[in-house]
Amino acid sequence: MSEYIQNESNELLAIIDSGSNSVRMNIYEIDWGTKDFSVVFSNRAMLKLASYKNDGILSADGEGKLFSVLRDFQAKANSYPTDKLIAFATASLRGIKNSDKILSRIKNRLGIDIDIITGEREAELDYIATKKEFEGNISDKGVVIDMGGGSTEIIAFENGSVTKMVSLPIGAVALWKTYVSNNSNSPFPNEEQRKQIEDYVLETLKQNRDLYNFGGTAYLIGGTARTLSKLDMEILGTQASSSGYSLSKNRFTIIRNAVFDDSKVDGVLIRKIANDRLTSIVPGVLSYKVIIKYLGVKEAIVSLAGVREGFMVEYTNNYKNSSNKGDLYYEL
Image (cartoon, rainbow, N blue to C red; front, side, top):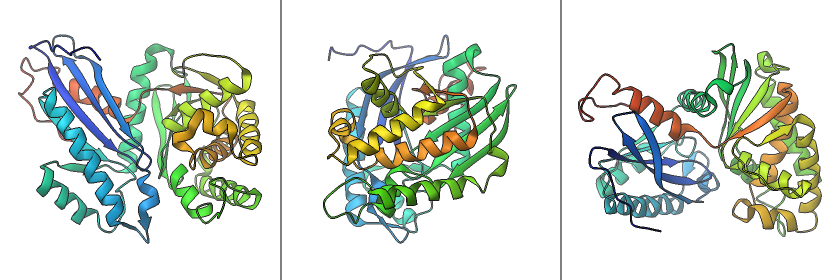
């Protein structure tokens, strides 16, 4: 990578997002003259923290892996150097019984304050990011779906207004751990486990009857959605960018069947396209097929934006009436 040269009038902001499947750090450069921002560095660690949870407690091994990644990311942020580092966690630490102790130890040892954001706050930032990415091209009616390792956020909107915002306990890693992890010889669900996953997702969705057949366009956020697009391209024998990739509703059934059939022969396709999501991608694909059908959307569009970009939009807007980047302190 060529050496990065910062414009001295701009700000470098590092954001660490600890999710249930992966922990990612993006470093953004903010041009305070225009309020625009761009990614100058991005890195991801596939920790699958949801698989280290037992009875609502994150294990010492899981905490240790998180600490190691945070330490490495902090060192990278300091090497630029960034003006500020902000860290937050979603379903990875949300609701676990020992989160306070973990956050305290990370603060004491690394000096990093991690904010645990609610599912509703995560959904709000997802919607802000989606509106920013698609600007005037966003549908009049639809849903934003952000499937992570531990939860799925769904935001229903119509004519520019949010009508429903919910965080559901549907996560690709969590589903694998609950229904598949006891498989002795395969990382993939068998027929019975597939049915259990799909039944669970449907019963969870049924608790939100106002989302049934909501319709419109779905905007998909997250690594599972990006992998879905890559799987579809491979099945079709085409190449395209995942950003803005469109899937008709029937493609989800086709992808689901192809992936499940592939998993029966040791996942040749899965290992080629999504080896870093070997255990979570089948539960994720199964879940998406059920969700899309339940919501009754006509098509789905993959978005590369997400909670980090939503945060950046709010962060820069918070200073829009300020001439100095440090005039205001931003609370997550």
